[in-house]
Length: 473
Image (cartoon, rainbow, N blue to C red; front, side):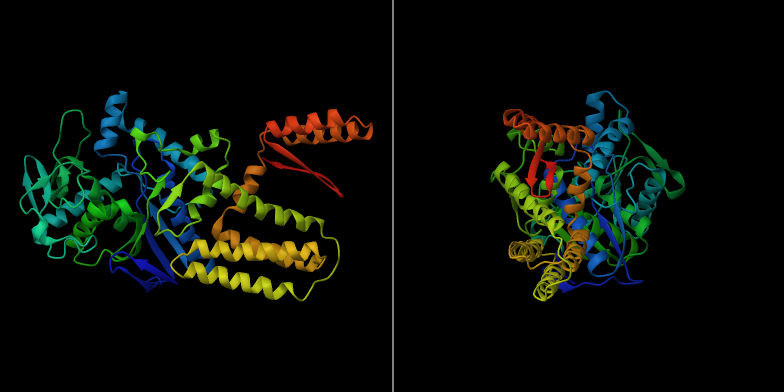
């Protein structure tokens, strides 16, 4: 596989460094609000990367995705809500897990919270190591990283060293892009803020800065540097990932990560997402508009991860239609009854498999991979139309789609959704029988009412020579 490495600004052959196991760290959600579809573009694309490494490349994957549950935004949010920090962030962690399941993300091996005691201790130990190595100074009860002690600082973001501000420091966890200053590692205690003390490590009472959290959790849970992949949204390149490199390499004396993978922005109606514009849609917002999470997943992986993706309600509707083409093709296979196989199909299936795998191994080109899938859909539909599909072909076609979906994860998600339709299955089946009875007595108006009522409730009926089947709208 070849992956684009933000650190080197080029595609490079990728393989894990040891034991056939990819050690991958993903910067997760800062849990001060429910995650939005822009966040989930990153998480869906990285889920496809994870699946590609496992199912196409044959590697084991050990992934860590964190929850940032202590930083300026979570503390401010908890204070405004009049809640304990842990209880405040619990609700958004629960919502994130719910949205992960809705979008079909695979279970991740480790999903640590920054405020778990072992992680806080790892942060304190890293701060202590940085102090020993001469990369810090103390001021007003806080401990800062001194960027002038790290000659390579700025290599990920390609910062201009002349534009850096030696001696100037920043206390905020979030600050202006390109504003390279000494940054806080450990914040001194403040009224109303949570505080921890690790006297045995020489770290005074206070709390961690945002950047130290990921560095410490990555190395605690994935082992010695360098890890294989560090990934996240493109907005994290600076300052967050740049500062992670400085901390980790300053503490260990080793490169932090071999590959840096960043997913481009999701924009909405050609505009950047913004609360002021009211376009930071969540998964429940999308579902309330009548769309299904499987269509969201399809849309989010439909473009190359290093290209911006423009979200519109029309594009989500197009994603739904594309996904319906896939499911309708598979449903047509149920109508095949002829035995045997036809020689033309096997080479087409093999070509589609090869093109799909090649596209994903080429820097996770999901757009080209989907193109290969729809070429197979067209070939299968044409063969069904001409009667050139046998039951042996059906088995091979279904196996190919199952293998494709192990990586894409859209068809399996659609099946899970179909198992929980908006109308109970026994009720749907009863309505179908009532509709059949109405048609037998030639009461077509009653039959149409049953069909239209189910459609209004999100269930479509499709008639065929072999009977009536239903599907979610």
